[in-house]
Length: 102
Image (tube, rainbow, N blue to C red):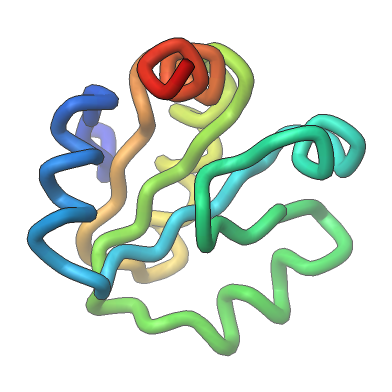
């Protein structure tokens, strides 16, 4: 059984409006992240993964974003296994997010 849930762009928008406690990590490459990302998201890579896990709040919702919502599922599952309680993979990834905000 996977330890994460799927989240639509609309659900993320509503969740963000309701609470400031959401953590968003973007696993795309640094150049793509620099070109555009969800506000307040953290660009998560192999280089900063251990630091992020050590410093993040395991109890707050964690949303994982990739390009199209595929690789974020594996990352979300991994982060759930590391002890995060409430993990989501953003369906459609940053592509869907940027379409909704264009």
